[in-house]
Amino acid sequence: MRIMGRPRGLIAVLAGALLLTGCGAGPSQVGAAVIVGDRSTSIDQVQNLIDKAVREQPVAQQLASQHKADLLGREVVRQLVVHELITKAAKQEGLTVDETEVAKALQRDPLAGPAAPEAQDPSSAVGDVVSRVRDHREALTDNYLLQQLAVKYLPKMAITADFALPVVDREMTADAARARAVAVAKEVAADPAAARAVFTREKQANGTKSGSDKFVALQYAGTPLSALFGAPVGSVIAVQTSPSSVTGWAVLVVRQRETDKPQSVDQSVQPTPALLSAFGRSLLAPYLGQLDLRVNPRYGVWDVVSMDLAPNEAATKGVVLLPHGAATVQQ
Image 1 (cartoon, one colour):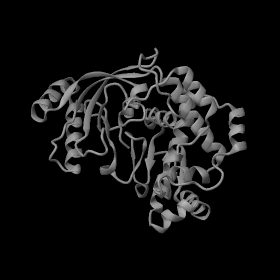
Image 2 (cartoon, rainbow, N blue to C red):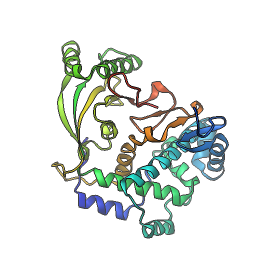
Image 3 (spheres, helix red, strand yellow):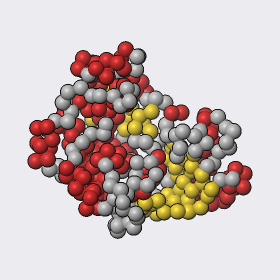
């Protein structure tokens, strides 16, 4: 999928669209739902937002009746984590909020009233439901800053990476395919200099496509490969590039990052506000290490590839590994 646009158009999209897309010292983990840096949110606070959603939002009532309230809890925690990350990123990146735009957005308040599910699937509206039961100014401001972060980097960002796709056999089960991709990523992370040799071996064994390429943000934002743009240079990524195919796994090694000059691409398509928000979230990955994220297992595990919560490790969209046996970036 190719997502393109002109920088001037990106600014216009941002200005007009405050829209939602749909251990040691520090806080104690006892009774905490999530800890981000020195900020702790209790299980009770998360439950209060879930209860508020069920009282006020018909979609949440549907989810509760289907025994899917865990989706609400996971989304509450996800949004709280993103809030802390974008607040940190905004300070370091010099991003500011246009209070006039926020005031205008609050006047027409896109978060007022009930959320509507897409295609009659209540789970598709979980993000919208949780945004509506949070403080509206905070939710809108978070989204505004995510879009600003995307606008700053989207036109100028590109990653050069070695890659192998796919790295699994077509006859494998979904679990076996994931395990195989992660195993290849770990092998490469243990010895990044041997990455091309490993990828050549995979090509001979499985008909894998391999090589080195430049991945331009304007082309790959909004795809599973968005994880590349938040990963550090030298890191190794295993990612499921095709959610509809159990064998659609790639392994990539980030070799170089460009952020200082406009990238030349076909500019016929404008990024939507939803795409800007999603890409901005991908760019928050580097701040995870700065803020020491700890999630209560009852809400799942943090998936650094999708910058979201997954029910468990096996449900994550992949892994990001640091080289030479360093600790995984995965939370």
